[in-house]
Picture 1 (cartoon, rainbow, N blue to C red):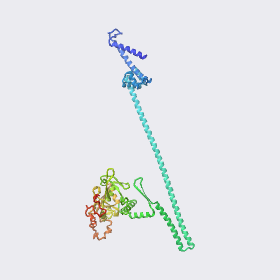
Picture 2 (picture 1 turned 90 degrees about the horizontal axis):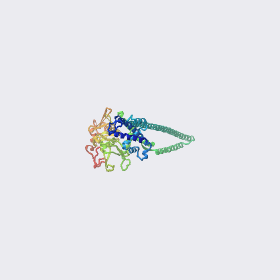
Picture 3 (picture 1 turned 90 degrees about the vertical axis):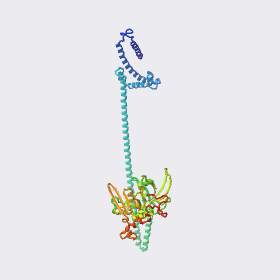
Picture 4 (picture 1 turned 60 degrees about the vertical axis):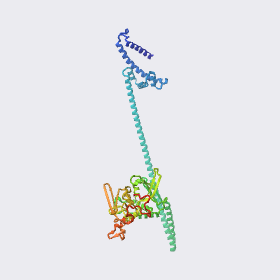
Amino acid sequence: MLVGEVLGGLGRLNGWLARASAGEVGEGHGTAGGPVDADAVRLVVDGLAGIDAALTAARLRAVVTADQAALPTADGAASLSAWIADRWGLTGSTAAREVRLAIGLVDEDEVLDQLQAGVISRDHAAGLVAAAEKQAADQDAAARARAAEEDRAREERRRADEQAQAEAASMAERMRLAREAAAREEQLARERAERAAQQAAANEAARKARQDALLDTAVKGASADQVRTDANRMRAADAAALERAVAAQRARRSVTFRPDGITGQRVMRVVLTDADYELVQSGIEAAHTFDPPNTPEDERRTGEQRRYDAFLDLVTAGVQAGELPTSRGTKPHVTVTVPLATLTGEAEVAGIGGFGTVISPETARRLACDARLTRAIIDANGMPLDIGRTTRAWTTAQHTAAERLFGGCAFPIADRSPCGRPIGWTDLHHVIWWRHDGPTDQDNGVSLCRHHHNAVHHDGWQLSFDLPTGTVTVQQTEGGRTVTRTTRFPHDNPRRSLEHDDPSTSGPDGPDPDRAGPDRADPDRTDPDRTDPGPGDPDGDDPDDGRLPI
């Protein structure tokens, strides 16, 4: 009814305006053709502004009321915006803006009243709604950020608590294990002490019993022969006990290998019988050498290092003796597989030992100084295509010449003082390294023990050798300080004092350097370019492969 009245009034107003625009309305609602009443038109225009504001507020309230009455659902519309667009003949975007403004002002009665009264415009109301929506969005984003930060803080506290609990539990477990281990060690120590005390008591009781038995025999008037017989019988019983102890030791003999948990180095544990202990100790004692007295303090080896070197010398001597059984048809040897580029210095690729040990590139080059080399050509997939014959870097004649010249390790530990370790414990080192195209010639080979060979390859010592004068020089620069030492051979040969009485090598002033020099020691060394000592030499290079330049 209200809408009908409004529409009726607007219809009448539209008719009056139509007549007025046609000049059919005069003053005082006079006859056609009269002038239009300006005040009346002004009043109509002002009234229409109020009608438009009231109509806008009514439209917005109508949208909200239609939504609350569920009219879009009842009429089968997809949404409130679609229903409004259909009912009012609006576009979808215009209807959506109308709905958004109406929903935004649903709780803003004061704004709607101001809009209805014409105090504010529709655009002003839309701006208020947009500002409110942005403020709500900002508050929501801030709330989400605060919630996320609180969630992160809670998660960090939870993780910290869990970690602290885990560390506490781990520490408690380690302490418990440590206490148990200490208690176990104490128990084992007590048990060992008790067994030792029991064994000592048993031995003492047995000794006392033997003495008492012999005394009883002598007191009873037994002859001296009878006493000796009883003593021999008791000693035989003791020997049987010793044999049982030896059998028990042999049952426990073992050699085990394990990696060190901290350094990763291999640790060998050997359980020896008493007799084998004596054998190993005698071998190490024979191979053990102290550093010469004038060796610098920072280059001296510890007692453990000296025993290690002596033990390795024993093993090396046994392997080089050629009397051990073969393995897969070959004599025991150290096998390292390494790319040729590593040996030439073009690459730094580690080698692999025969038992899977990783060998550093520099260690591989040190081993190649005095080793047999086998060429192996493989495809990209690692399939062997060709395995060449084995060649040897240094010939037997060259080793003999080095022994005659140097007499042992030629590394100077001080001026005019070579190391002098026996020649059998040395390798021939290439003065000009193979990767620098150093040849396998007598003037490029110096005998070095394992310790000093490592020093040249790994500790920064530079070594040079002048064959005509027999001068070996080493130099190291470290911390801004340069150390240089020189020895001259054969004068500094440690075996020289043993050979100076030989008339074939002595003159009126001592050894003849020309006769003792390497060029006089063997015909094979007179030609520095000679590489094949002859088909009869088992250490000669493979004539098919040629000499490898190491």
